Length: 287
Image (tube, rainbow, N blue to C red):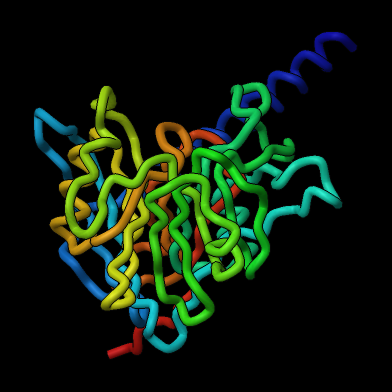
């Protein structure tokens, strides 16, 4: 009897290992981005990927989604949070592909840092709070004294607050808003104050905007310094922008049937996410 049970447990263990290995290969190897020149993959959504190779600032794969917010059918959102009056925490941690499927997005990226953040409190289903201020549909999560708020009004006009915390007047005007750890780009130039003592090369994400053209960029890098990230963003056209959560949270994933790419191509972090930024858009017409 004991031998039979051991054999069953062994079979279960082998099958589970094979399934986990197959899922890892599919999401973390097969769907990694390959170099691709700037291409419109959904209506109003342009995509670019490549290899960053600069000894002084970093190396590895990168992805860029360039979103034209005034394109009909393009919709931006921040994952809704639980009001503090109803729940003890803002979010339930979920894998990125679960959130992508739930929100039916064509582009989805990690958002703000969350707390608690220790590995044993960063498992799917656990409850966490956003560390930075969020605005979702005109409702504010909380006022974080260190947040630099990138916000949009209902017409998707974008603004960056270069003082923290965001004022009550700003929060009243904002329809969407996401708090930044630091703003790396201001008025099309580097904000050198955000780089003092910070030059580590690691996985990073950035959100950037050009208010005049109503273009937004979402970027993810496998390994880059803050200065390299800021310089790259400026070269792409970003006038205001900053870093979101990084390292093991670094995630940028595409949706179903992007033109010229595998469905769900992306860079996926090693942990589930709380806040995410999403873009919904229409498919490109078939030739």
